[in-house]
Image 1: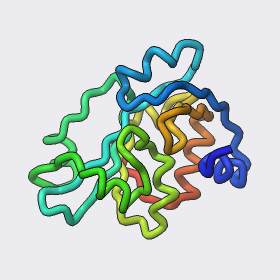
Image 2 (image 1 turned 180 degrees about the horizontal axis):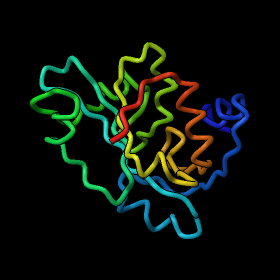
Image 3 (image 1 turned 30 degrees about the horizontal axis):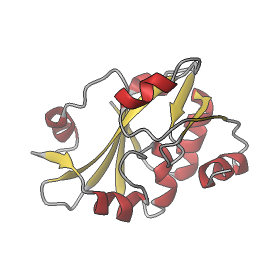
Image 4 (image 1 turned 90 degrees about the horizontal axis):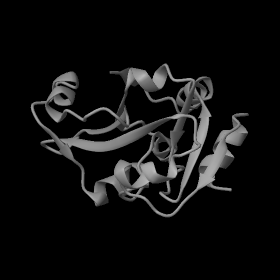
Length: 157
């Protein structure tokens, strides 16, 4: 059982675990999604041009990550992908394993969060449990409970 699964269990959240080979992109992961009835996501870890702000953006896997529009949303002229070192420092994650569950590793709430409204409104959602060799599925309501527990302000986009 992963640390994420233990955290969810402590919150009384039930999830389904689906193990698979390592995947780093949506394209790689799609071949393992057959039979998983849930909205899957793509997760972007971004930073502003100065590197003084960091953002976790969670989108329905079918959406395109428009960095210019996201920058405008956060009041930044330019956003770019954060380095693996920044990802590890801020969310305790490595590339290919980014997910909203990484927020459990940011108790100081330094990472700003934006999540697609399609994920908010989904009946079931699926994310990596901070490793790219598994997918966890939970209800949309339980995902909302998780977000409330980690305490990050969420910008719904």
